[in-house]
Image 1 (spheres, rainbow over the protein chains, first blue to last red):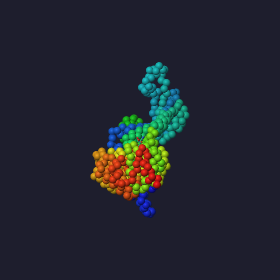
Image 2 (spheres, rainbow over the protein chains, first blue to last red; image 1 turned 180 degrees about the vertical axis):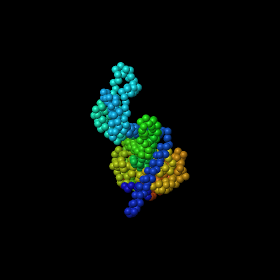
Image 3 (tube, protein in one colour; image 1 turned 60 degrees about the horizontal axis):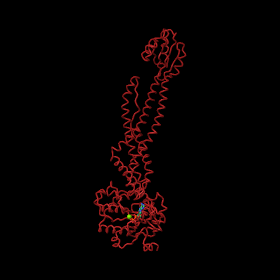
Image 4 (cartoon, rainbow over the protein chains, first blue to last red; image 1 turned 120 degrees about the vertical axis):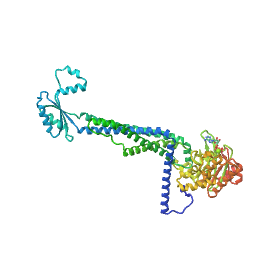
Length: 328
Length: 225
Ligand SMILES: Nc1ncnc2c1ncn2[C@@H]1O[C@H](COP(=O)(O)OP(=O)(O)O)[C@@H](O)[C@H]1O
Ligand SMILES: [Mg+2]
């Protein structure tokens, strides 16, 4: 049996077409195919906007599911940036021997100041240290019980941005007046470890929420298919293939995903603007300026692309089986 | 061409709707399928449409055994058929025009061909002026004619109709039959199930009589010959 798929009735015996005619036919086919996709896309978009309130809930769920891991990702990136900027302002705390004569300290500071790796020094006498400790710790009463002041004299050394502060600490630590040199970067290592953990968590969360988006779109599409059962039956009756019948629903999934992605971007951009203000204040305390990674066109493209892909995949999953089960 | 060979159709309940039906209908032939309500007319048409499968025996359409058709081939097979079913199966949220265009749409016709063919089909059933209406804005008879336009719009090789004139007045019924007849003249095989005996007599076409799932003896002879 010949298939009469060509517009002018392939069933009538036609002379063998030349290469040009064949090419024209292919172009016709392709043209018809693209036309059809455009129509289906437009039609499903109109359908999508036909019930805006109903769709809003689905779109918001998708948006939140995408914005959460994306926001977390930005947060982790920001923390990493913070850690990086603090690291360059590294500090070495020198605990001096208690027996060091007070008049040796200015000489020591002078020596330090001439060291190429040192940017600045601050001297904290035992009395000042005790006052600070009392003020900060709230354990002042306990200290009253002690005889005298147990704190050693301290010099806070700020290393040059380009200097290797660990090497500086090692070198200065061996000087006779110095009891111990401590590098204040342990907490940075902790921050970095936490950022790595945060990244890992972000990935896990993203995977879980992507699955959530798939299921949400899938469920929405399943309902849409059920609502249009009659249409599917008729289309199959007149010879619509599974792919043809499925297409509008894939486009519907695409629209859900795309609008969810754009909404997620809006949420992120708003959240970033919201957080930048307190972050600026925090940065001011450290005489630095930190910015959250920008939420711009690249982020929009990435979110919209991922979301649209998830939308199509979710629709495909839902439509696959169900489409087969609806037979005229 | 339609060929039935000893076809039985038994529904899950155990009811035998068709029992040993054999006949052949050549290309361009026009036949009525008559019989009392429950005789098995719709069941026979549903077998050709592959809405049901024969319990035993063979249905051959244009030389192809429907029992051997792969699931993925069914849509392409159905594009060779034109169908008017008892309930119109029109899409209520689309215009008359869009409903009639469906068979062309699924077959990948180009928009300008679709427009030309849809207008021609609507013209043939006298509904060109209602192209923009929704089905529910039409009378039952007009809806039936939309279904008929949709069945012929792609010039199918086989035209099947189940009580197509059920909602039409006599003049319109006769006109629709003239239209079907014209299609058989250009080589379309036409099979019309009806209990409207008056309609059948007027046209003097071949008649397949079903009774309790069996073809009347006279029809068997024609078929086996
Ligand atoms: N889906 C079905 N399940 C069970 N029995 C059916 C089904 N469809 C039709 N029948 C039975 O098969 C017989 C033939 O029905 P049908 O082909 O519709 O007859 P007609 O179209 O000539 O009135 C009837 O007795 C009917 O009840
Ligand atoms: Mg019937």
